[in-house]
Image (tube, rainbow, N blue to C red):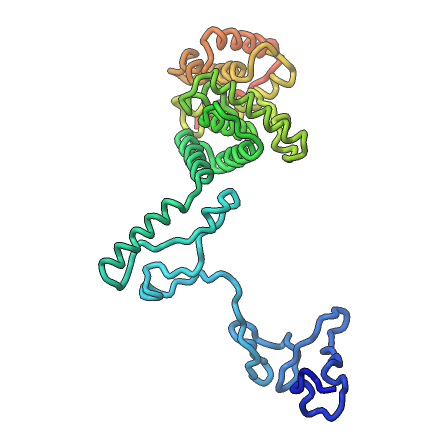
Length: 360
């Protein structure tokens, strides 16, 4: 029978399986099972090669192969390369939260060559492309991220707080997007929860004022935020770290650094007074000395007691109550209890540390 592939058997008088026999494997190194590579000239193993730019045998100088760099090419070859100002061969970083826009094509704004009609046509193409580069959902998400970044920058929050707030908002929108609720109030709830997660909590009134919201609007959005995340966690859609029940409990020591920074004291005195006040606030909470006071009120009383013991002039209790956001009557009541406990020896304050910091 004539073969359908005559050239396959050209040069062979009869059928054999020479072409299909498995060639012997290259020798393997002892104990590793990895195929060894040897120099084609002197048969030296590849461990004796120089592999910086070319694979060169150190014994005989034979150039075996050139290394192909498979990494990203960040090098800049000059302004004349490829006819553009920035000839970088690496695209912009991608963000999984923007799956459509980060994979889009960028059209450069500088056109070279052609007549005026062609350049005007390309300008229109570029404009239409920029209009359709971001879909509606990703454009609104980008606006929310810019709103969070602006609020965090104006109030001195770090990058970690911004990233956590963005992740919380993405998780919230992915599982439920209730209509009829202000987006700004939901963003405020995410930022408030992010501050609690990094142990830098703020009072609800402060966060509401950052976004120009009322307490009623912020409370409603915070309730919705906690409800959605709890339901998603119970269904196994989120990890337990994103559940509101896993957020750390606020303590009075968390409300000391921010109001203390608003008082007219030196930087060195601020560092020492903060350490003393935080230690005293934790001691008071451990023995449950003032259980009827909220953490911000207790923090205001601790600050007033520490400043009173440090004998810093021109800082009245009225000013301390103002920067802490509590009433002067609440501050005086808490300070009276703390002063009595200090005289009775129930609590102690590091007077020597304060005196050493203020005298030097």
